[in-house]
Image (tube, rainbow, N blue to C red):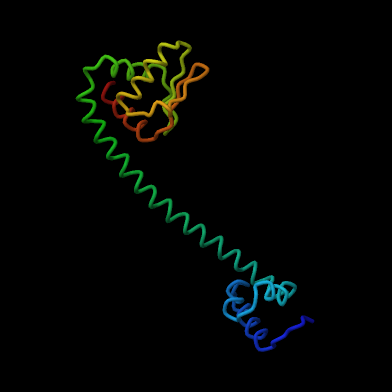
Length: 174
């Protein structure tokens, strides 16, 4: 039997716990510490069932919340991709007479990794190729040179919008 200083508070807390309230919620309502509520009910079978039910409900709510967040992010991403595509079409018209632009596009079409959705990846053992491709990324895609990774025969930059632009340019180039 649990030692209780106030049977009124205990009964009130017990009622709230049976209705599915958490220890934290009960402690605020009844005016006792969370530890006290835990001592009262941690060994009670009905309280263990409430805890499990609350965990199941919390998981379901988290799944719903994450789905809503992802839906909002997907809408935002789609909007950004559409804008990147629109800008890429306009930029292509201006850039298509530049030798560096044509070099960068041709090189990426020939040996670039087109499979990754957000990574621009160019493998080559020639250092000069990486230097020129780096210039292409900076001048035409607006890449920050500190975000361009070049090592062991590969140049990589992670930027989904830049990749989208590059793919639009490649479609127009081909």
